[in-house]
Image (cartoon, rainbow, N blue to C red):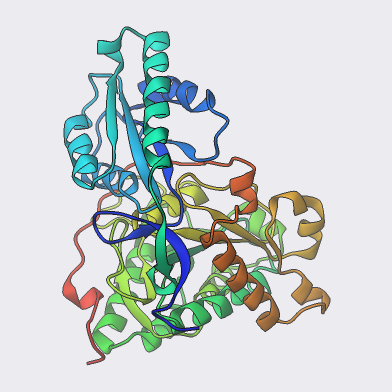
Length: 405
């Protein structure tokens, strides 16, 4: 398969990126506008109208940047912003940013519209108009190496690091070899793997930065008094954070690590990237990611067109904006939750398939979903989304080195 030969169809955006979906986003700008926004979305029986939002009345820079990034994600074709009217989110700046990206955008302010029913009715009418505009947009050829693919693990158990995670790693190796940008995370679940990752970095400077970001995560967790190890992990057979870390690490495959990014940073080129999700500075925001979907949102903000979600214990979540492909690690879990899974990696454990076979199946599923096929969670209408508070310092040029020196 040629790197430059188009293999997909996408939707062209003004910034040169292409989306594999063309969704209308209804975004509430404070929790007080959540109900009205949900009423608008629930009016439609449409898998391509998605609800997202930020609940806080006082956003910080991180939250504002994240809202801007997700509202201008390549998979987003148009946006309806719903404001109460007295929150501190700069709704005009967000609307202007979306408009500057070339997307149709509308803004409703509940305090100016007349209340719940009136705003809901106006919102429904506006979504109809936005959908009509997107219906006129033609798809364009999209090369495989224009994709950005992320991966996370959730509800891990003792099978995750043996089956699903390394199978995703095989898929990542295949994608990276074709110049696709692939993102793995979470530094708090990679404690103990920093030296291994540093050895895979494209140069020693990046290797040192990777070690520093894992040390930051370890310090953060120690100060806050928790680690990325849940009771469900122990019930599933995991015994230590190090054991969980090695399983999580295996999702990254064996490719050279090209860069270290933070939430909202877009990979500048194909390659393998580590996403640092733990806030910078002194710990003050609590859990870095209170649920798996917080990490998915951050990968979406980094441009991920879709996410590979591995699970041993089982999960039923999906995501707004970008499809989630669920890879089940445990054959018994797959039997119980087959209706929510895309791939049964548990076949590796039962001897029915090899890592390479399942890795190739994941790869082909990525191509199918990127080509328009609905993932299971997407077809079920899952649109989980959560955004809270964090603080990050900008990355330096050494995080994205241009060459191996």
